[in-house]
Length: 167
Image (cartoon, rainbow, N blue to C red; front, side, top):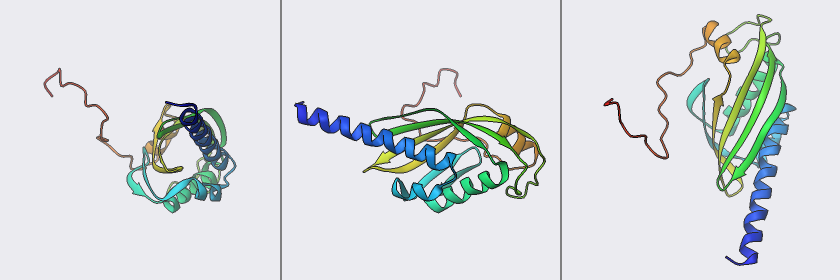
C-alpha cells in the first residue's frame, strides 16, 4: 500500500468519524434535519422498540416523538468508525413529563439509558442503524407501561456460534 492509499483511508475514517459526531449532535439537539445528509433515505432500522423498520422519516419521527415525550439530555459516551461500521454510544437522562409516547401517557418517571447506535456505512451514508440498550431503565419503563417490545430477536450473525449445547 502506498502513501496515497493510506492517506485516502485516513481521510475516509476522519470523514466517517465526523459523520458519527454529526449523528450524535443532531440527536442531542433534536435537530433531526441534520441527519438528511448522512443517513440514507431507505435506512434499515432495528431497536428494542421495533424491528424491521425502514426509512429516515421513520427514524426522525421516532426520535422526535422520543424528545417530545422524554425531553432528554443526551451525553456522548463514545463514537468511532472502523471501515464500513460505526458506533455511537450515548447516555440519555430522561423523564416522561412531556407528550404522550405511542399511547403511553406521561407519568413523571425518569431515569437514564445507555444506548449504542450500531451503524453500517456505505458511500458516506448510514444504510443500517441498530440500537442496542446497555442499561434497562427505559426498556423496563416502556415494558411496564405496556409498550410491545420485540421478542426472540435473531439478527443475521457475522459468525454463527458453535452449537455446543445441542440446541
